[in-house]
Length: 393
Ligand SMILES: Cc1ncc(COP(=O)(O)O)c(C=O)c1O
Image 1 (cartoon, rainbow, N blue to C red):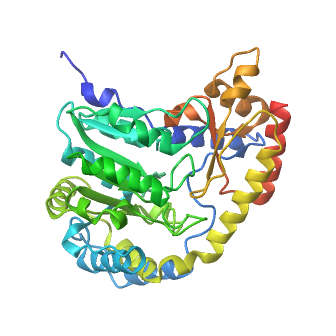
Image 2 (image 1 turned 180 degrees about the vertical axis):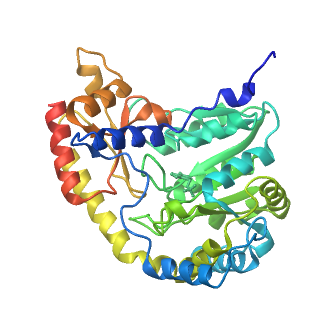
């Protein structure tokens, strides 16, 4: 047999954040006093009304196959949400519901890419974009972070120099994982003017929409309705409603894209379980109001973690405006050390020696940084950052 496995899929790596989380949990089980800042999920429970809706739906027997791409009721509820909260007009036929935003993004790569097509996005980026593109036969093209600081407008200004005639998709992610920035109107205008000059698909990953602390969330489509025929909005329930394990995500897309996505899903996961759809309807009908207390609590923890990090000499970071991560720039600190450690090696040492789990920037295409998730208790934030200070000073 010339090739035992798919050459394309052999290039796909396991998700580094999931792997690190598993390692931190295993060490915890062995009795090590691990403080973990790795998780990509809120630490609060799914609201009770959503859980009750699921139980009610199961008891009513909604346990059969559903429709590929999502049932009409949930797709209508998503359209109503997009109109009410985002001032965006999509029809239910343009909405496709999938097993998490992750499946939606993967199916988008399968649906839109041909061998060698290029997909461009800014670093730091969410861990799965690159591998999903590779799995679909495409080529990820990354705009690297600036040499100092993390000014996203500088990267946008360079965007076109990373594009070729093979560029097919631009992926945007705001609020951003891992950097915590949110595109403001000026940044979106800068991106929109570039996008208008090209024929790219724009995938806008807005999964952290509800976690935008400084200003209401804004989508590129709000400012550039003329891009609608090329624009695919991706969102999900994991982060905003604390429903990571429920696996609900969706795309709102041009009709032809929605149709292909539905076809692909009909040949893979088939559909979301009906009882989860019913619960998701209840979540989305309540909207952001359901999560006010939890969002305010994350906002407070952002301030706490950022304030404590500022007291550690030699490290830098931008104040995150959204999501629940702080992306710490260790580049100057690392340069000052005689050991010449990389951020990957530093994170391994922090875990082994200080029982502190943080994700190295290498996982996000930004060596020299480390990501801290502050969706943990305030006590853990204080204790963990005390440990970090001791480790670094
Ligand atoms: C930026 C971003 N996009 C998409 C996802 C996928 O979310 P899910 O599959 O849970 O809906 C995540 C999850 O961590 C993420 O951080």
